[in-house]
Length: 151
Length: 151
DNA sequence: GGCATGTATCTCGCTCAGCGAGAGAATACG
DNA sequence: CGTATTCTCTCGCTGAGCGAGATACATGCC
Image (cartoon, rainbow over all chains, first blue to last red; front, side, top):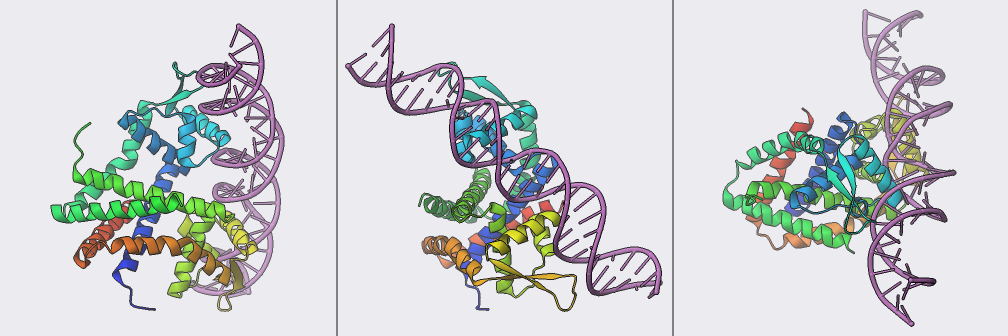
């Protein structure tokens, strides 16, 4: 067992953090009768709604790595749960707009609310300059992963 | 749209990073005929092997949130792929030890190898003190999520 | 206009990951 | 000992997601 250098320790921390967040999400999803995919879709839809972007089944499926058949099933599921609503795009009638219902927003807050508050509270132990470093670091790491994903 | 304060920006970065890592893992898994669960199991098994810990189907299932039936299926799958081997525990013959094969180690290196190298390289742009801050930050955030998960 | 090509979504049939229930085998404990 | 407990596996089932293809609308070209 070699002495662990800081870089490797950081890599393991990053991985461990994603595992924890994944499990947290999976447990929340199960508790609310959702599947992990449903929760990821919900997050994507809420982000888009906040940014004012229109999401179609095609875009959603692409973001989650599903094919069109799987996406239709996912959208059916979310609609049946009363989390979203389908609406034909009047400009291009082949398209369908996915609109989030109030219930989805509440669910999202239930999921994130407590956790975000705890995370922000824990950040209080760090100074502004330290948070700026953390931010630069996370941005750099995210960039590396995104670049690796694009091959 | 309120001006984004640093803490919220950091929360979104953390989430975005996990999404990127998840997708990276899912794509790697699909390319190698694995399911996301298989890859997570593999990571857990390799970590345990490096730490010298014995993993049984029970422990593995618990770590991944599967029940016993699903775990048996998972272990069957990994065994069929030649990634692990079952072996009865001689001390307690109810238990089964899961032993990783060379092939699993190679696959793990194929998955992590390139990405880790890139991540470590990107860390080169940070000073030792900055890396120490990043490390403290990640440890704090991981602790918060783990605590939230334990309710 | 009329026709070919492209795009967005959905339907159908299927595979297989994971669940619930419970069986079987080994161990611990009164 | 016998009974409770622990660990793994089998069986039958549900349903998420895939491949193939149908359908509807849009757009470009003659």
